Amino acid sequence: MAATRGTPQTGCSAANSQFQGSELVKDTMGGFFDNSSFMPHGHCYLWKPSLLALNVVSDGIIALAYYSIPLMLVFLARRRRDLPFSWLFAMFGGFILACGTTHLMEIWTIWRPDYWVSASLKAFTAVISIATAVTLIPMLPRLLALRSPADLEVLNREMALEIARRRLAEAESAVRTEELRRSNEQLATFARITSHDLREPLRSVGSFSQLLARRYRHQLDTDADEFFGHVLKGVRRMEGLLDDLLAHLNASTAPHRPQPVEVGTSLGRVMHGLRATIGRSGAHITHDVLPAVRGDLERIELLLHHLLANSLKFRREEAPRIHLGAVRDGALWRFTLRDNGIGIAPEHVADLFTVGRRFHAREQYRGNGVGLAICRRIVERHGGRIWLDGGAEAGAVFHFTLPALGGAEAEAVAA
Image (cartoon, rainbow, N blue to C red; front, top):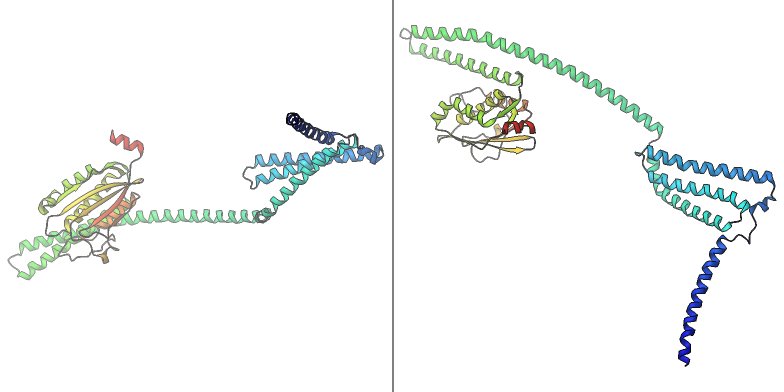
C-alpha cells in the first residue's frame, strides 16, 4: 500500500517541478517587460519641459544621424562593388544602427520605464561594438597599406607620363618602320635594276667568249681553251647568283597573298618539276596525308622545291629516301621532312639558314648557299619558323610550321 501510494506522490512532484519551472520563466519574462517597479526617466528631469525637449530633440537627431550613416554605407557598397573590405562596411553599419537605437530607447524611457529592454539593447550594442573592434585590429595594416588620394594622384601622373612616353615611342617606331619600308622598297628596286643591268654585260661576255672559243678553237693552244672555259663558268655562276639573290629578295618583299593551299597537291607539282633529278638519282619520295594550310601558293611551292632539291643534292651513294609528314600543333601545322643524305655537321647548324653560307666546295656541290635562307624567309612571312633537328642519327630532319585553316575555310576545303 505504501508503494501504491508512493507512485502518485512521485508524479505530483514532477508535475509540481514543471509548474514551478514554467512559473519561473513566466515571472522572469514578466519581470523583463514589467515596468511597474520603476519610475520613468522623466522624473529625473523633474518633468521640466525645456530639459525634456532638449534631451528628446538631441537623442532624436543623434538617432537620425546614426540611421542615415548605414544607408549611405549600403548605397556606397552597392554602387562601388570593386571596393575592398565591403563586409567591414556591413559590420560598421550594424554597430552604428544599434547605437542609434539606444538613443531612441533613451527617448522611450523618459515616459516608459522599460529599463530591462534598454539594458538588453545596450548589451547587444556592446557585443557588436567589441566584435567590430576585434575585427578591425588585424585589418589595420591592410587598411594603412591602401593608397592615399595624394599617392593615387602621383601614380596617375606617372602613368600618364608613361602612356605619353609609350605613345611617343610607338609614333617614332611607326616612323622608323615606314622609313625602313621605303628603304627596303628602294633597295629592292635598286637590286632588280642592278640585276637587269648586270645581266646585259654578262650575256655579252658569255656570248663573245663562246664566239671566240668556236672561231679560234684550233688556232690557239690548249691553255686558251681552258681560259675560255673559266670565263664561261664565271658568267654562269654570276647569273646563278643573281637569280638566287632575286629569289631571296622576292621571298622577302613580294606581295603576300594568303589562301587555302593543299600541301599534298603542291608537293605533287614540285615533284613533277623535279622529275628529271628524281629519275637520275633514283629517289624514293613518300608523304603522309598532308593538310591544307593558309598561305601563299607560289611561296609554299618554292619552299617545298628548295627543301626537296636540298635533300636530292646532298645525298649519299645510295638512292635518296625522303619523307614529308605533318602533325597539328595548336593553330599551326608542323611539317617534318626527313632524308637519308649526308646530314649536317653540328658546327654548321647555327649558320645553316644564313644567306650565302656554303659548307662544301663548289666542285662537290653546286649552288650559292641561298636556298635554305629563302626557305626561312618564306616560313617567317607565314608566321611560322623552320629549324633543323640536331638529334637526327643519320641524314637531315627539317621541321617547319605553317598556319592552319580557320573553321569555315577548313570546312570549305573539306567540302
